[in-house]
Length: 422
Image (cartoon, rainbow, N blue to C red):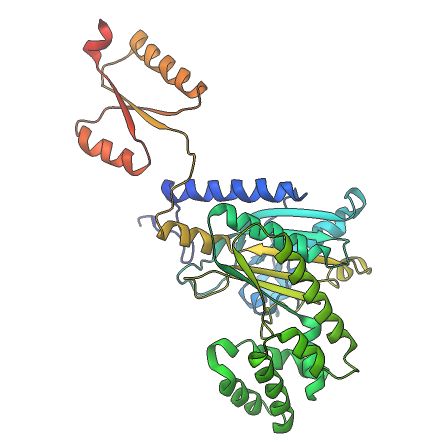
C-alpha cells in the first residue's frame, strides 16, 4: 500500500514563497513587540487535559486533539470513560499554556511581566478559507498590571506592528465584559442567563436586531426583558456618543458598568492620542468574544476585505487564580497570523528590503579546483550581504531559470567547464 503524499486534513504544506513572507512578518512582530518591552517565551505544545478542559475556552474545548496515555497506563479494555485513557491534549490557543507557565515560574519573572509567544496551535475545526487545524498564533500578554495601561500598551504595540507590515484603514473594536453584564442586569436578565444572552447578542452582525429578538424569545426569555434589552442596543446604535449614552441609561446600581464606560473612554482617548498606524478605535457594544475567561475590556481587529476578525484579546484577571489560588491581573492580545498571511499573499505582497538573490548555475563537469573557485566567489558574495544559491545547470536552462525567478532570484551567473579552464 502506497504512503499518502498529502497532508492530514486541515493541515498543509507551506511553499517557499509563502514561507519567506511568514518569516518576514514574524520578524516584524518580534522586533516591534520587543521595543515595547515584551519578552519571548515558549511553552510545550502538549498540555494536561484537565487544564485544557476547565470550562474557560468556550467552544474550543470541543475541538481539542486529545492524546492517549502511554505504555502501561493505557488500559483501553478496562476503561469506561474517556478520561481514563486520555491525559493530555494539543493546545488550542496560547493563553491557557501561558497562564500555566506564569503560575509555575512567577518567582523567576519580573513584575509586571510582559510576555511574547508565537507558535502552532491545533483545533479539530472544519477547514475553510484562512482556517486550518494547525495554525500559528502570535500573542502578547501582560501580568501584574491592573490599570488600563495594560490595554493601552497592548493595543498600541499590536497596531504599530500591523502598520509596519503595511495594513491601513483598519479598526480596533472595543467593549467591556462588565458593561455587557451591566446592560443585561439593567434589562432584567439573571446572572446565570448572561452567557446564553451573550451568545445570541454576538450574532447581531449576522442576524440583525430582529434575529436576536427571535432567538432570545425562542430561548424562553420574557418578552418585556428582551424588549428593554434591545431598546438599549437600538439607542446605542443611533447615539452619536455610544459610551455617553450607555452611562446615562444604566441605572445607578450598575456601578461596574459605569466604571467600565469610564475605562473604555480612557483607553480609546489614550490610544488615539498616541497611535502611529492608520486605524480607528470603535466602541462596539455587541462585541462579546467567545472565551468565558474574559473579565473586563475586550477587543478585536477588523481589516477591510476580510469577513472575520483578524485578531483580538482582552482582560482575564481570574485565570491565574485557578492555578495558584491567588488572582493576578492579566491582559492579552493575539494577532490573527494566518489571516494576515492570507491577505498578504493574495495581494501579491513582496518582502521589502530583501537581500539580492543570485543563482550560480554550474555546468556539469565543473569539479576540483574549478568548483572550489566557484564556491569561493559565492562565499565572498554572501559575506557582502548577498544571498547566493549554487546549483548544477539543468539541460533545460530556460525552465530552470523560470523556476528560480518564481523563488525571487533575479540575477544569474553561469559557470562553464571550458571557460573555467582558462
